Length: 491
Image (cartoon, rainbow, N blue to C red; front, side, top):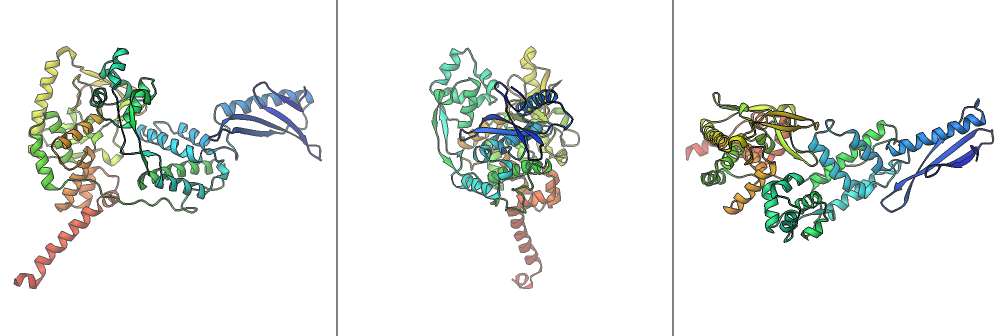
């Protein structure tokens, strides 16, 4: 078989074409898996040999070109006008692995791409149009694929893990969930379907063999749809820079971004907060201290759990926000810098809060004494880039074995506290909104609130707390009217 037509075993097919002018071109074609409709994905390229090559040289070089082409497809680096969106998107995500992206952001993008690729992944980059995106967003809004109001429970899980000689603590570590969630699942209590999926994955067993699933679907929120749009736009922007497409179909010049419906953040009013704080007097000091700090500082949950005793300045009554603790699937609990430069900040707190911190510090030291040789004076932490580091164990909020607490443990405890006391719904993050809203209502200026929250700009604060600002403005108008209106003064 000569250079004109040949097929490497399990590889490419090559066809020779000679133009009327006598120019020779070789068309190399192969297949690269199947698309979402079960159709084989065809890849092709061309190679034109230089005029001075002998037939033997052409045959040798052609085989080399075939091998290079096949390797480029295997490595996911062969992109052209026929490249599918899914192939390019997966490579884009691979190129932006941490530390290019924050680990939490990377995991969120992976999750969003599952939805995106299921809908438009099969479309060639050059064929992707704005109407494809609009149809996708409409589908997410009207029908969606989000499971809500759902839960999973199991009457088999406890016996199953027992047969595998697994403890609840070990299972929690394997699946990256809090011990509270795993214990609830083993008791047959309701847990989220997402948690059930993580447990089943860790046990390498289909979720429907371990759990009874109650599933409904509804449309995504406008904010989540906008997140899908922004990710698509970022990927297509890179495709334009790579000159694979002439324009970004998701750009504002070609389509309107999904409209974001402004939703007020959940927060408690001052009376509700006072009542909640009274109830905390009857709770374990670890949880009481955590909730107090969230209410009075406005810090994020991850920032709270990233605190070390060296961050607590008892003399000057300030707390330094230097780290944040997060759970990232596939990495476990990681320690990283706060989300932006302005998030690294110092927060002033009252003497009463520091009196509580003194009390909690004494409890923490007694816990260390009681654990004796079981206390881990040094712990290994995972950084945002995946590297490990051994540090002195000075975390404020820890598990019973002295290791850093899982962020979901605080959320799980808060939910039970709310239900147990029949309180209005709130989460740890709601307390951040509560803190900001109370400051604004009390007349604290927006730049000060913004710095205290660690926002990247005052505009972010204004956008998130528009309702609280408007309410404060109404109060201000009434105050000035009372001061200056002569008719009211006459009364």
